[in-house]
Image (cartoon, rainbow, N blue to C red; front, side, top):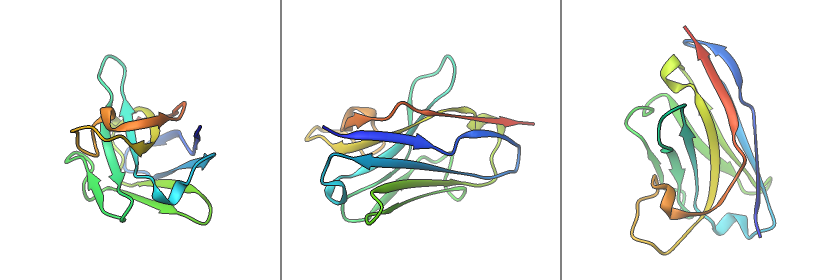
Length: 125
């Protein structure tokens, strides 16, 4: 059993920054790949950034150069630093953990076994 708790969401003006955190418990966290996803109203959940167990990172084209994913194994915490935010980044952001042995990329929601409850990010123009 894995518990994932996101925090750090909020409201910010366009051009601003936020840092999301995802605290993980109940698992051998350092061995898991993890990712951040988001879902805007009326849209499907999309992969934003992911980090594999070997530290390799992947990003959606829409966030490359603006978002950075990282994890602190000592604190069992995953982070997403988001800079140069735009209204198009408004969504609920979810943390995911443990890659399943399925044929899917790290930015596919099908790849992950555990999910957090999400944190709202709202960017105003």
